[in-house]
Length: 111
Image (cartoon, rainbow, N blue to C red; front, side, top):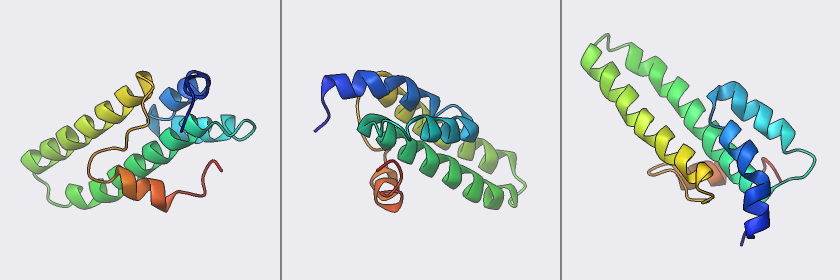
C-alpha cells in the first residue's frame, strides 16, 4: 500500500509520464534513483497506453476512414484523460480494459 508521502513525492513524475512518449521516458529515468512506487505504476500505465496507441494506430490508419480514425482518437483520448486524471488526483487506478495487463507486462519497470 502506498503512503500519502509516496504519492505526493511521485505525483510530478507520474503526471510527466502521460505527456507524450518522451514524457514517459523522462519520467522513467527521473524515477530510477528513488524508485517511487506511485511513479512506477503510472510509468507502466503510460508506456502501455502509448505503445498500444502507436501499434494499433498504425493498423487503424490502414482503414483510410475518417470515422474509424475519429473513433480511435476518441477512444484513446478517453483512456489517456482517465489515466492522467488518476495521476493528478493521486490514485493508482489501472486504465480501463488494459491497465492490469500493462502492470503485469511491464512489472519489471521501476522496481
